[in-house]
Image 1 (cartoon, rainbow, N blue to C red):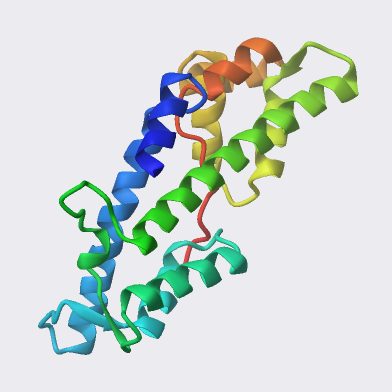
Image 2 (image 1 turned 30 degrees about the vertical axis):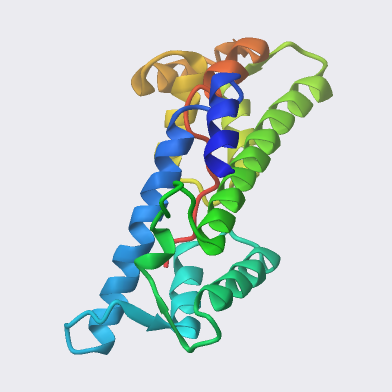
Length: 207
């Protein structure tokens, strides 16, 4: 169960609480987007259902970092939810039953979200650690850390990178920019845990 996995990882300090908030936001955003699409198709009046191909096409525009394999699995789950029909009731996809369980599509989407967050977290930590090991040092400059974060996620904006750097360096954005200008160093073993104390997520491509 996705809820259990996410709570356990937050409890163990492996993930920030914002991960669950981000997941819940996604689960609320998808029905809203699909309702907008529904209204566009039906002259401003939502019908509550949408064709599976249209649903998947819109989902692809939202989740630009997801792999083809993940989309394929989501489409299979969606077709199952549609019960071999052409349309799917987009609000029903995210409803819970009397036992608090959600359907196959929603559970799969949540599991993928968690896997993607964990994978990106590992990528950032490994990239920072590798950079320090390569130079044979225990501290890296803010400038080097910026380069490492940008290489790990080329689509992330400078503003978002600044937020990551400020969190990892335990200071304000203005202070981290000053530290970078002054070529100050940051201990890697201090930077990584503080960086992981908030949401780490790969940037979606802008449509």
